[in-house]
Amino acid sequence: MMKNVVEQLLNRKGYQIKGANSGLEALEIIKTSRVDLLVSDIIMPGMNGYELLQIIKKTFPHIGVVMMTGYGDANSIKEALSLVADEYITKPFKGHEIALIIERAYWRFLANQQPVQQVQPK
Image 1 (cartoon, one colour):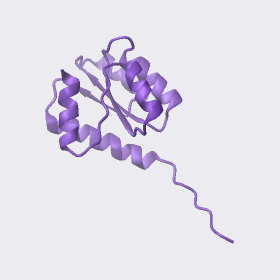
Image 2 (cartoon, rainbow, N blue to C red):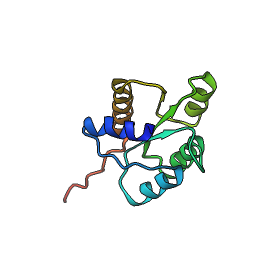
Image 3 (cartoon, helix red, strand yellow):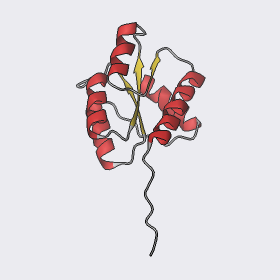
Image 4 (cartoon, rainbow, N blue to C red):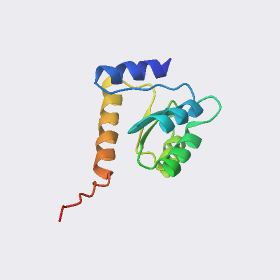
């Protein structure tokens, strides 16, 4: 299963991974855990990746999103980017390719974070 392969690759790179088998399961994890970056397939049971992406960007805009598709056609990519995916990758991919995409999306996520305002004592 592709999910397991991606989890293994990212675990080896030192990322903390929480895997989900569906979009609804991913939403439950996001509601109860700190999540910086979501990697989602477009084709999933129950809720497709586009629907999940829309919910994430509306409800949890601080989370970066990488979309995976087995359909490298321009329409899938255009749809993901129009819904404000931070990155995308087409399957099949090599381990170093997904790692590069994740790194790029993660650093973009960090760069877009609002700085914490510090209050100076009087």
